[in-house]
Structure formats: structure tokens, C-alpha cells
Length: 184
Image 1 (cartoon, rainbow, N blue to C red):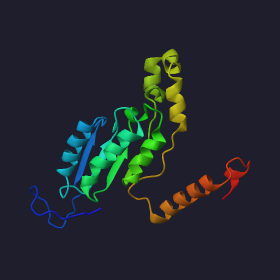
Image 2: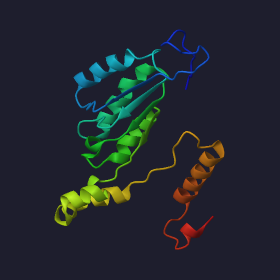
Image 3: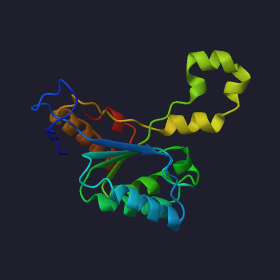
């Protein structure tokens, strides 16, 4: 990612300070060719004006890989600007999350899934009551199937290597072996 020192700026701005230009949007709901054309033009207008683009949920209308491919094509006009995305509930509608994430990854778009159902927070659980909280078993199941990996500004390269190495070991191991989790 390019970090630039921008000339000028607000009063008190020092020339040697770094500025990262971030564009963020969400709920773009691509699903029709006209949507792709409109967002391709919008993303194209950001080229050379931003250092990173953040896409916050509901990238597709129905969560099918073909719609994710539309998103991928639309951001290609950014020509090397990193694009990071978090999938939203519309991106899950077809229950093809992994295919959607793969279609985005092919275009260099990193994705993350992070979801804690609101009824699992104590304040909402008290407000909603036990019957209401028990009425969403699919939500609870989906939340249990998600995994968030470490991601924060001070994450060191060696920490990244450790996480990546361990994940590689886990996915390449025979997960049916009873002692796979004990391997170090």
C-alpha cells in the first residue's frame, strides 16, 4: 500500500506526516449488468485517488459466485489498489460463501467473515428474552461455523508466519486422525 505525504492540508498539518487515503462503501448489491457498469465507473473514478478500498458487506444481491465475479470485474479498474472486503448477509443468501470468497480472491480481494449474532450479547438477550433468542437456530449455527483470524496493526511478520503455517498444517493434515489437534 502506498503511504504518501500530501502537500497542504488543514491548519497545523505537517508536511512530513503520512496520509493514507481510504475509500469505503458497503451494500453495493451487484446482481445485474447495469450494477456492474455503474460500480465499475465509480471504482474507476477512485483510481490514483486512494491507497486502499474497503467494501463493507452485501457486495452481491443474492450471494452467488457469478455476482461476486461482477464485483471482482468492477474493482479491476483500480489497477493495483488493494481492496479488502467483509461479506454481509446478502453474500450468504445462496449458502455459497466459500465460492463467493474464492471469486473475490481471484481478483486479489481479501475477504473476512465476522459475525456475532446480536441476541448473543447480554444486553440484547435480556431485552429479547429466552424464547426470542432460541428462535434463531440457523443464526446460531452459522455463527459457530465462522472463524476470524488474527488481524491487527501490530501483527508481526513472524506472527503471520505462525498463523499461516499452523493453518497450512491443519488443512493439509488428515483431520480424521484423532490426534490432529495435538500436533504442534
